[in-house]
Amino acid sequence: MDIVKQVVDQRTGKVIEENASFFVDFAHDAEKQKSFAFLLLGVAAYLDIDIAEAAQYLTDGGNDGGFDAAYITQSGEGMLNVVLFQAKYTRDLEKESNFPANAVEKSVNTIKNIFDSGRQMRLNDKSRVTVDEIRSFLADGVIPYVTFVLINNGLKWNQDAQNHIDNEFSDQRQVEFVYFNHHDIIKYVNKRDKIDEILNLTGAAIKEDFNYKEVILGRVSVKEIARLLEKYGDSLLDKNIRKYLGINAVNKAIHDTLLDNSKRPNFFFYNNGITMICSDFKYNALQKEDWKVQTQSLQIINGGQTCKTIYQALKDNSDIDFSDTTVLLRLYAVGTDESVIDGITRATNSQNPVDFRDLKSNDQIQLLLEQGAKELGYVYKRKKDNQTNTEAIPSSVAAESVFAVWRKKPHLAKYKKGEFFDAYYDDIFTNLNAAQMIIAVLIFRMCDNYRKKYSMNKEIEAQRRYSHYLIAAIIGTLILKRCNITIEGITHINFNKIKKYFDDNQDDLYYDAEQLLLSRLKRYFGEEDLEKLDGRSMAAVFRRFDFVENVLKIL
Image (cartoon, rainbow, N blue to C red):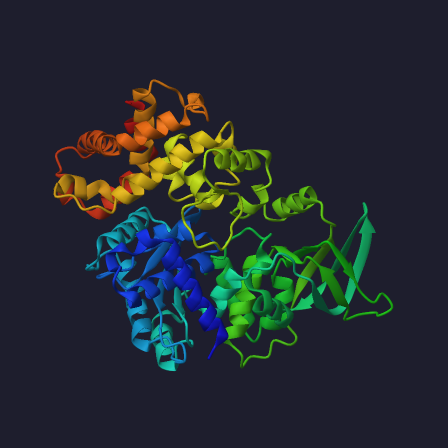
């Protein structure tokens, strides 16, 4: 029996045990519980996020439209990254089966249905919101780049399944299918804190010393890059804080160049290269070329997307000879000075959207939030980890909540997650204390729970599943007004008083916020009945800065 399967199966059991509230709907169905927990682990592992954050992206259920989870983010002006997931879990751990071909065919049709706005789809409420949000972006002329991640605890899909993909998308630059299984999940669970590895360089290289640091400039085979990714997975990319969300125009160009017989020999000249750092390196200086460089604490800090694309291309095309295909390598030995490492990481990633969460984790304000939360009885997680309990507060969830609730930017909090710890870091965290942060998270989580509740009132039901970010901002303002306090006035001293008011009045606060929002929506849409509005129109209005500002300024 595959030992990795056993470990992942054990891990799903831990997810179920520590998060009973997630499994209320099928508390007596062990098979569904396992499948749901496996999906949760797979989404968290692929996106490299906490379990608590991954839970909000799940859409699994009847009439889910062919996808079990969805992650949507704006990756630049006029571009939208959409990552869809479908998971198949086999409880028979001795069975080795391929990802079902009919499920792959369904995934192909899912993409065709979602991204053709004229097609009608039968969807559950969670999936409907996702599709409406995507289509609202499409209506604005945004170009989608779609990655469909198929997850199982068995084998990859067979050739029949691949034919379904190729028949529809072989010449399509906006769609990619990715296989992800229990071995990939275990790499996430068992992330290494320190990677010591030998790097095999190709041909001649240059080594320089300056300012008490060392650097090697050379070439490395793409097969060597693939070897490292196969061995260490995303652990090698911990300092490279750009998530690999799958295909986009740049990644597709890299992929196509690697597979093009005429372009592949010149791949070195077409690519900007990869930057790695380590605390120290050693090599045989008496050897003229093909150095074997012994590194300590190796990390990729720029070129993570290139590395992941190389890895996937080589993994999917074992019949192609990549022996003579190389890429530029910059290897810096920078010791253990975090400020130097952070500076290099920032500089080398300055032209791309990145997630600086871990780089910011040692900031004074993050340390103070951790300590302050602990004194108030809460756990604040400054860094990503692979813990299964969702009661703790990840800094990413804190940032999302504070941005929506106290900074009154709900329209940005939803789709700009990759910029919380970079472009919006000061806006979110400056002058923020632990009491304010926790109240914001409690409000946000309450609103997220309410959006899942069905309302017999058709007008409420028409907007509820799209509005929870804005509702959270309204509730934050209502609490301040009714407690006769400013945001600056919330401290550890009155935290329990504010929290008690919130706990005792949750239903009333939500009702009042929703009624206020309904009145503004009716004014905005004029004579139209809200329940008759197309979901795309409803999704789009909550991205409009002028509407959000107008709602919040009247409070």
